[in-house]
Length: 82
Image (cartoon, rainbow, N blue to C red; front, side):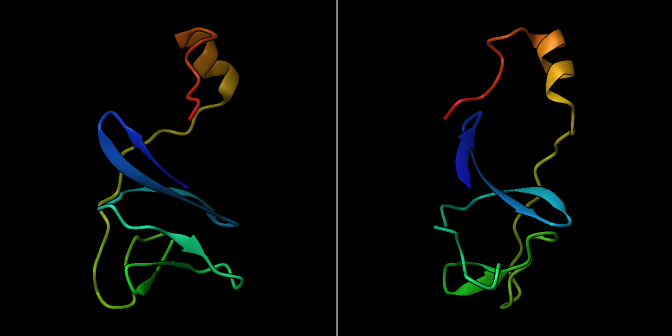
């Protein structure tokens, strides 16, 4: 999934191993049938943000919280909706 958060382009990869977020330099990511992620002519590792051709995506700082804890702290209207 790609989106913009606070003016920064972000790509989020979800896999069996977890959820990972990276800065997106305007690439169009697609998930293949095998589960790999492709963009800009190469494949990308969802956990490290590194490409098969040696490039890297910058990690986005994030904290994992339960939805009810976030809502208690920030209010019912605080959830992101694309």
